[in-house]
Image 1: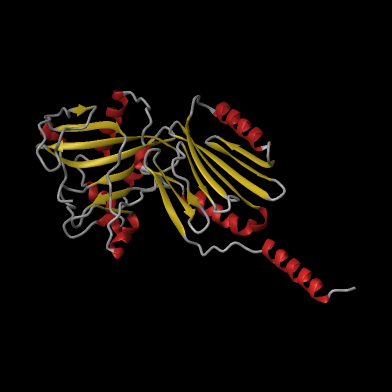
Image 2: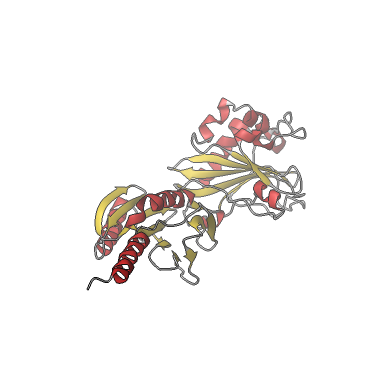
Length: 350
């Protein structure tokens, strides 16, 4: 006998199952930034979908409540140099992914590689970047049926990945004589007998050889109690108190400028006991600045400073005059050439 109630129940149950299986993920576009101070990187993750797993070092894992979506960031030391090692590492990861996925795409470049693949219900994306003698690997696994949404999320995640000043932990060695020679060339061309602020303000051609065409230069300065970071679009933070007239002279050193392959002790708020001259050294830290957006919330936060992904080291050059640091410059080694990326004009009132 035909049972209408039972048939109706089965029909609506099937409709419910089908609707659930086709249900789209709910995502309003909210991201949070995860900062790994030990490995020196920042990355955004969709906080409505993923939650960070505690205690997963050296691989940081983010996973959804149902376990079907996960993001991971791992950092490993590069054991060898050259494209051969990158190619070999890509092959190892490809074989590992092939155990559960069909690897559909593999792109290998000088600074890393990308793997993509799929299974019956899942897709994955894996990107590895070789930076500062380390491999940073970002891997995202998600449900195939929500490809459009997750691809937008993945794009945001990859774009958000940035190294922080804490990542400047490389041990590149540089010839001290060559560093001093570079510092001498830079100061002779744009510092001595020049007003550097004026050159920077006017985008002087004298600076062209020292400024990277893509990354430009930014200036640390504290117009008030907090240090801020200013770009060219913000006129480098120059104001009515900026000195556009003083031109430091090398003549005070009697024709022989002393150079030192270290940083002076003090010289900011207290007079240094070191001799006047030019100090230059490869360093691991950059100055810190406040995020101006945090003023709106009344909670002051440190600015996340974006850095190039392909630099090798950071060279700091400081000029000590009458016991105090007058100017500080930060150069980045990008493709074996030093480029000025930051000028520090903040003072001890910050």
